[in-house]
Image 1 (cartoon, rainbow, N blue to C red):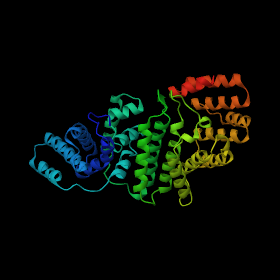
Image 2: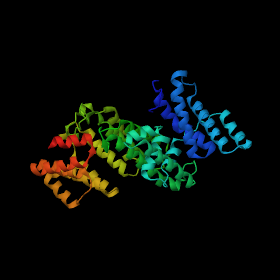
Image 3: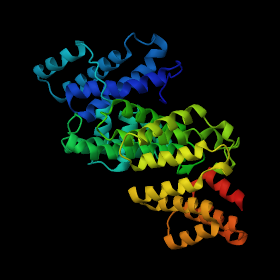
Image 4: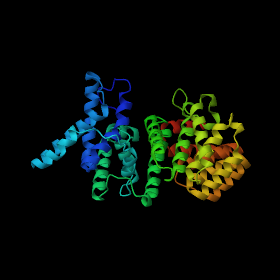
Length: 401
C-alpha cells in the first residue's frame, strides 16, 4: 500500500481486501462516509506500522474496525461534548463485528452520479481498492495534492447529495451499474496502456481493476446486468493475458502481431474464453461482451497470420451498432484493412475523418506502410510519436521511422 512497515508477506493484500469490509462496517454504524473513510485510512496506517512489529491480530478485520471506530469517536468528541453521543458510539466498539461484505455497496456509492468520472476513479481506488492517496497519485501520474483534493471534493459532493449507504433501488441500479463498469474499465485501461509516463503498464491499476470486477461479478445479483459484468471481466482477463509479451527487456512496446504468444498467460486465456462463451449463450448481449469476444478471437490464434480477421470485422460491425465511437470506428478500420487490404482501410479512414488522437496517425502510418507508401508512412509515424505522452509508445513509433 505504499505505507511504512509493509515487509510482512501478504500484509498488503490483507489490508486491501479488508478495506471495503472495514469501511462498510463503520459507515453503516455512523452514516457519514467522508469522516468514516478518513478514520479507516488512519486505521490502515496504524496496522501497517504496528503489525510487522507486533504480529497480525487473530481477527484483523475486527482490529481495524475497532481502531477506525475509536478514531471516529475522537472526532465526535471534538465536535460535541454531549455525553449521550459518546455513549451511543461506545457500544459499537465493544460489540460484535458484522459479517456483511459491503464492497458492492461501496462501489455504487463511489460511482455516485453527482461525481465526475475522475473523482469516481480516485474514490473507488481508495475506498474500495484500499490504495493510499500517494499510490493513486503515482499510478495516475498526478500530484498527491491533486488526488487528495479530488477525493475530498468527491466525499463532500456525496454528503451534499444526501447519498445513503445502501444499494440503489433496482430501478436506479442499472444506470448506476453502467457507471461502475465504466470506472472499472477506465482503471484497467490506464493500467494496461498508460496514457503517459515512462512505463507502458501500471500493473497495480490493471490488477486492482480485475480484482474489483471479480468481486462485482461474484456478488451482484444475476438479474442486475450480470452479462455485461461477466463480459467486462472476460475482456480484462483476455487482454491482461498478453501483458508478459507486450514489452521488451528495455521496456519497449511489442505490437500484437510481433508478440511471442507462448509468453501469454494460458490460464487467464482459458478462464476468459470460458467466461465469455458461457455469457454469450445466456445473457443479453452488450458492448463489453462483444469486446471480450474480439479479444478471444485474437487470443485463440496461434500466430498473427492465423487471426480470423473477417470474424473480428463482423464483431466490430456489431460493436459499432451497440456503442458507436471514434475508437470503435478506428479499430473497425484496422479489421477492415486486415480483411480487405490496406487501401480499403485508408479509404475508410479518409471517409471517417477522425481527428484528435495520436492513434489515428499511428493507424494511418501502419496502413500506408502496408500499402508501400513509405514517405507518407514516415510522416504519420512522426506525427503519432509527437502526439503520445507515453514514453514506451513514443520509442516504438520513433523506431518505425
